[in-house]
Image 1: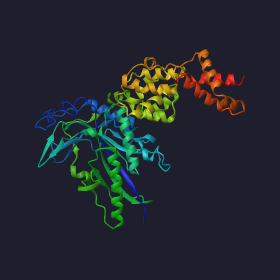
Image 2 (image 1 turned 90 degrees about the vertical axis):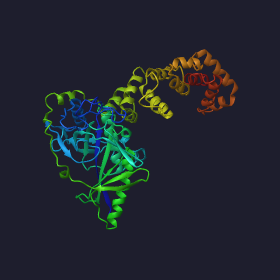
Image 3 (image 1 turned 120 degrees about the vertical axis):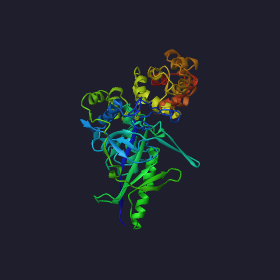
Image 4 (image 1 turned 60 degrees about the vertical axis):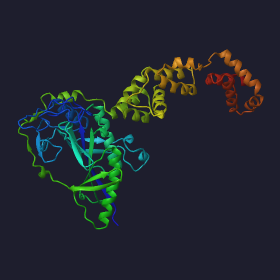
Length: 483
């Protein structure tokens, strides 16, 4: 029996973060009352004229720059003609043969993959997924279906929408997951979109086919829609690859079609046979002149280029002495990376701040976007440990109160009575007590069992109720026992 492999390409639609819609001055806002952000232009009334949104064009070019695309010096808008209730003009203003951005790539990274495959040695975690194009268009309205009736909210109609089309470089559902995760990171870093799939700000259509391993020609492509999360993309691909493989092995031909993913049932269902590009009868929009992007638009976009996740990761390792893994996690979320840099600014041990943030804060299910703690408190807590004023165990006791009350660690240390005893005379007296009360441990140490000092150290910590500085205690005990 032949062994098959999948060939996957993704079409990702991204709503741009602008104040107004693509071709009119209506507010671009999620969550408004139905049909409250509409006008004659986005409702497709006769005689109205569209005006392109400059900010949307700049943000599309910026996306192209972040993804290593070639930016077209000239582009135009086209009409994509079809009849459907969500498209009030019966055509969508889009771009066909002269898109704003061509080629480019998205580079995957370890943390973009699902956690259950991050230790798989067969996975290529640094794979580059090439892009075909990025074009700019207007979004359609949103349909709602009730018992026995349907409704349409035109607030979304006319919203600026980028379509990012990958080449068929994706080989597994896990790579598709990582591609979308890495792409979303970059879009958020650039401030071009919030890319929230639950709000429809990032939507994905999947194209997938299978072929015998080693064959160059592609199989028959199937498109999957109704994918509302990155996890749904992964699950739908697993199902569809198995479905197509079973059909081919049973001698059933694969038909080019569009299928709908049902997340509750975990299956895809046929919607329609697939349209061809000529079915849309594209032609240049006569109401919109071609754009010359070199006249200021490209330069403005380039001036907004951010430090991207890969570059930020390298800088965090170099400037903050954090581990590669810590830097990867911190750089994966722009809000988290920005917070960490403020939190570690005054810390003597910046890696310790990363540990508090990544291991202690997130262990409590802390929110990345809204960390309710003055960032300087992380540096203060770390420095208290570094200076020997509290030990690591005491810091763990202070930490949850610091987060819950947003109170300075130095204040909490006093309130909790956790200040470490560093006075040498006081510690020597405690060490003398421990030595006198534990002659067997003393004898073991003198007989060459150097680990016996740990039992004595534990007794001193107990006598001090955990407030003795363990390093100083260890030094005093060794000095006394070796005398």
